[in-house]
Every structure is written in C-alpha cells, then in structure tokens.
Image 1 (cartoon, helix red, strand yellow):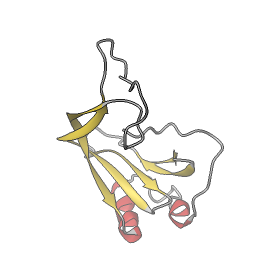
Image 2: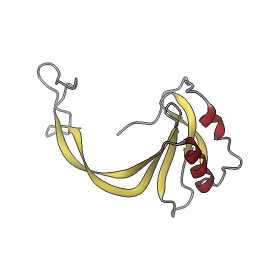
Image 3: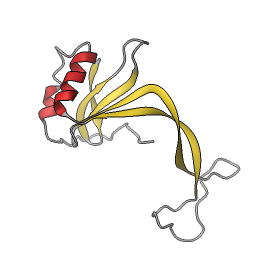
Length: 130
C-alpha cells in the first residue's frame, strides 16, 4: 500500500506491506536521487563497523582527539544480520514496480513525488539510518 512519508527533509511516498505474504518489508522513494529503495524480508550476514562498548554497554570514547575518520569513539568490525536492499534507479521502472505491487496505485498520486524536486518540510524525520 502506498502512503505519504518523509525521507530526510522531503515529503515522499512509501510502500508498506498489508499482507504477511509480501516479499518486502518496505520501500521508500528517494526524491533527491529519484530512486526507489526496497528492503526485502530476506536476510544476510554482513560485516559492519560498530561502536566498541564497555562492560556497561556504553560507547567507548577516545581519551584524546579524533580518529582519521572523524569519529571520537572506538569501533570494531562485527558480523551483523541485515536485510537485502534493492534500488530501482530508472523512473519508468519505479512506476512499473508501483503499479505491480501497490494495491492503491490507481488512487494514490505517487507521480507528484516522482515529478517533484526535493521539498523541505519543517518536521524532523523519524527515519534513522542503520
């Protein structure tokens, strides 16, 4: 199902599952790059750099300065289970995907977001990157 959403500071559309048999957790249209980002229900193991934690679960901050990457805390490489991500970069293919998967594609005006330039909204985004 298509819904209105926010990505960064712009209004956009998102696809959310309405049945348990959906193969995607969600999809969101990135207005700036004109890309539909899809998050699958399928998982994979990937390596990620994560903050190093002390015995209390708090981030271990460096005693002096910053690292070369600008971070002020120690990191370690960990194996993490993540969802597969897919990116539909061709606008015509985005439209075809929406038509194929969204139950309200004929009544929701998603084309306004595809045609629009990035538009800043005054509310903070609830979306956090992992």
